[in-house]
Length: 299
Image 1: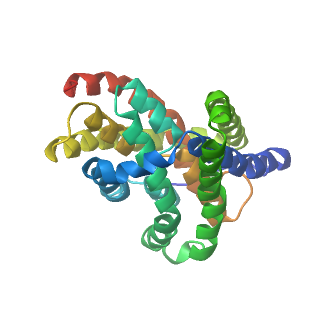
Image 2: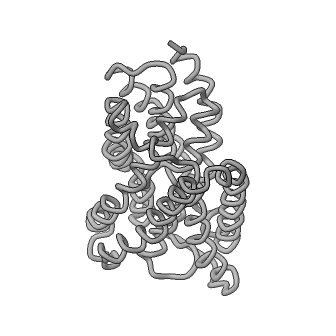
């Protein structure tokens, strides 16, 4: 399958290259701004639910993506992009959707925070493996250390700064948390819209090829999360949370890491699956929340 894209568009690419890492940093800061040290304490107070969520998101999500890529024929660049998405942690969006679905929001926040911090270590290693598996010798050289340092700077550091600011100024955090989350969301939407506009031919010519895989992946992960939770004894709000946490990935992280790997301006082929997924996840997950409520009555 031949991939086509628009010529470079300097101003738009500059917006993407600056705005995307900035929006990710703001999103992660807003995540930390909504955390307290007690959220990390849930790892000890409800270890079973946290460990199940971590297992699902860090192991089963990449496994499901890998298996589906054996069924859906994808160009190597897009297959690699799908794997990048599967390695990404959940985000603030998963917390919002968990709340909409009547899930355990406290558990969702804890999982998002813990997995986001662990991803600084796990994602660079998994990215290096996926590049070899799907791109082979044609792929770019993966600098694991550089990716880890960059991810730490734009994900872990903002989370920790937000957490510390909330600790020392809880009143400010309560007043500003909602506004900051909305600013982060608007900034992300503007950057992604700009990215898609700059790569419109690439997006339009391939969305029909990517959408079926991404829809199936989203549905499979939502169902797998629910099944995993139920099999291991979680019910009600906890089970709904695990389902959403597995089904919803942080597309911003995947797009940002794709840009770091490609070493190019704007959003390229590696990032297109995450950009398409950023739209599809809402169209799939929000209707699915009603099914989750029916399948997991509150206990």
